[in-house]
Amino acid sequence: RINIFGNNITHESVIRNQLEIDEGDPYNELLSAKSINNLKASNLFKKVESTISDGAELNTKIIDINIEEKPTGEIMVGAGAGSEGGTLGFSVIENNFLGKGIKLSTNLDLTEDAVKGQFSVTNPNFNYTDKSLTTSLESTNIDKLTDSGYKSTKTGFTLGTGFEQFENVYFLPRVQTFYEDLETKSTASTNLKKQSGSYFESKFVYNLNYDMRNQ
Image 1 (cartoon, rainbow, N blue to C red):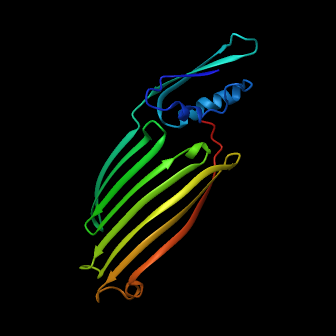
Image 2: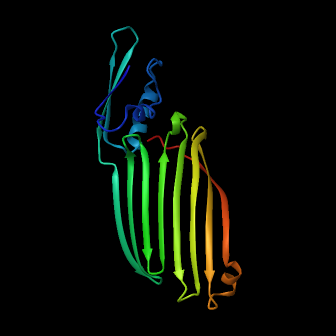
């Protein structure tokens, strides 16, 4: 039997999804330790501890998992200056939305000529499939009509997933689609004038990650 204590916010299903053993399985010390490491690596909890005791019946075990939750939100504000002028950045991230382990992220970057914003949602275990699902929306507006003779607006979305294809090998494919409108003046460069207009851009991108870390 596996008992979980201390999760006042996080759903119990989120915790059990990180475990390498289920109730009723033969007890395995290595898998039990890996389960605790998985919970620690999720970065949702301040403390994760477990105790193992004998059950009432012969050859049975009881695993008590005690967790201490922590704030999972992040706020960042940054400012700087460079060759392109001043820059101001702002982002808000929640790593455990509604206690479901869902990650929400939004950021906004401002410069003298550009505004860029993005909002993304990542479900690490979509519909209990052991596959993540990521969706994001982003938009970029660059206005350099005065200095460089062009103005660009680019808006699009990304849809992606991730899963363990082989042991320690993770496959992360995603599809990106953008709509861009480029407006130019007589002062723009020849290359920019050739690209002037509206068009769609679609990409298929993937990552292969090989990760042997045990905690």
